[in-house]
Image 1 (cartoon, rainbow, N blue to C red):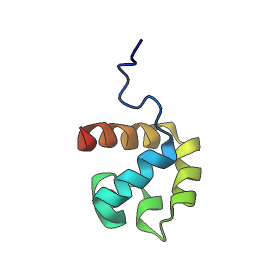
Image 2: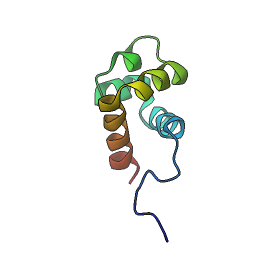
Image 3: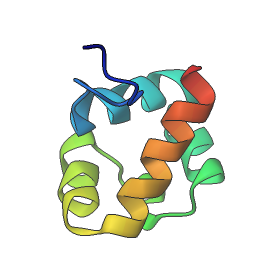
Image 4: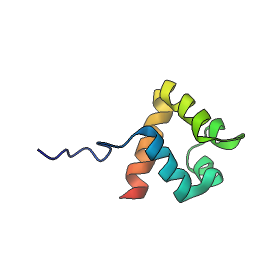
Length: 69
């Protein structure tokens, strides 16, 4: 059975990497106003924040679904 979940099989790291490639850090910070995207952003520091902050992770996932579809 094929999953209808657009995030199925995609890790948070892959999602974030694709968004950074698509928008850049500055563009991502404009889309989602989170300090980890504005001040010395790195994939690892952003992942650490997103993994423990559900509302921020949801916004990142929603932006990914919207921008990559």
